[in-house]
Structure formats: structure tokens, C-alpha cells
Amino acid sequence: MQKRKVEIFTSGCPICESTVDLVNKLACPSCEIIIYDLNKDNKKEIRNKATVYGIERIPAVAVNGKLLECCDMSSVSENILRQAGVGSA
Image (cartoon, rainbow, N blue to C red; front, side, top):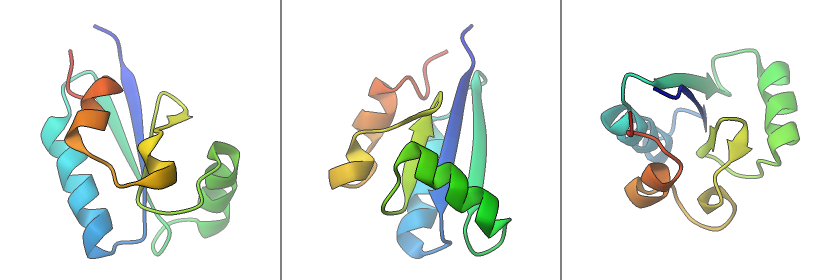
């Protein structure tokens, strides 16, 4: 079973929360979910991590250290998450 590190960048807005819910719904036992909330957590550390990933808008999702392509142009979808391996054991 291949472990997947799924990082979600959020600000706690309704759109962000629906992305968190979608990832949690699809996650399998091999998915490690980490949520970075810009309003609650260490903002400087999260902003640095977001800069490394090239995140310019949120919500954004990275799987195994790679920002999903949808996060550049559109919203996170179930199809994109599945293509990245989220939900596959």
C-alpha cells in the first residue's frame, strides 16, 4: 500500500470547507491528510510552504509534494483528486 501525503491549504471559507470535506470523503487508509488553515495556524510557515508549491489561490491541494494542476485554473474536483491517487489504496 503506497502512502499519499495530501495537503490542503484553506482559509476556512465555505468553498475551502467543501474541499476539505471532499478530500476527507475520498481519503483511504493510505492517505495522510494535513490541513493548513491560514487563519488558525502558523501563518508564516504556511505561507512559506505555499510559496514553495507556487500556490496563488485557495483552496489548494498538493499530493505527495506536488500541487494539483486544477489549483492553478479551476476548483478541486473529485475526478482530479482520484487522478492524483486520493482514495486508491
